[in-house]
Length: 274
Image (cartoon, rainbow, N blue to C red; front, top):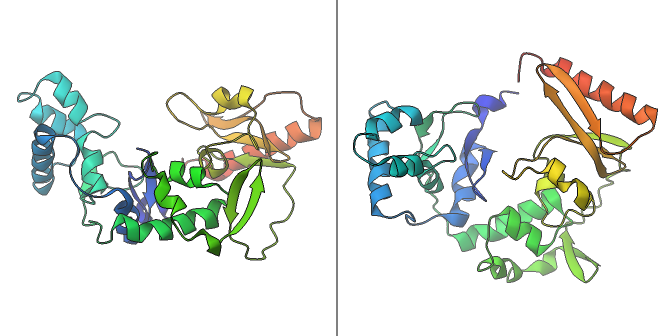
């Protein structure tokens, strides 16, 4: 409850937006903190954007108008891109975040990382494995936005503290806490960007290659999906206030009826809230 205002929306890993507990933001940002990567011209624009926010201007659209007479159109488009522009760099350094989870305006924040990347990496790797394990080093590197040049930082961690299994000569790490995970449900509706889709580099265990383009758009958006016995079997959504359900192949009537009922129930529960 209250997630729209309780969480801070900002860019973290892989250039994507995440909802983050404000007290946790400094730790999460430390993995990629440090320096300005865009050149002096864009640093100057960013510093002036911060000054404008100090004076009460928080809208990216308003800033585009203010800067329009001073820079060419290409520079303005790059600096204030809908994908983030200079605000991505300001956010990476803990200076700016969106006002709340639904706002398009920004606020100045104070979340400058105080730890080094080396100090937070073991913590973040453990969080990843605890949430998504069994998972590979490559999975963690992808999720945390570590490129090939930094992937070895994960391999250098103390991995002996984790349980391990091997499938097709690939090591998967997990935390064996003795918990009973139960059986995989026959039918599950997964949200857009559900971790079972976005947290792994190799998704063959849950998603057939021929259905990948239907689930993951070229823009990187992952649509809400339907899992049947743990494998992605279709898509669902709420469009214009009504639930939609689409399977990739014929399913038993009890499955299709149950999927429609579950989508309808979500539609009723969220009506007027999303």
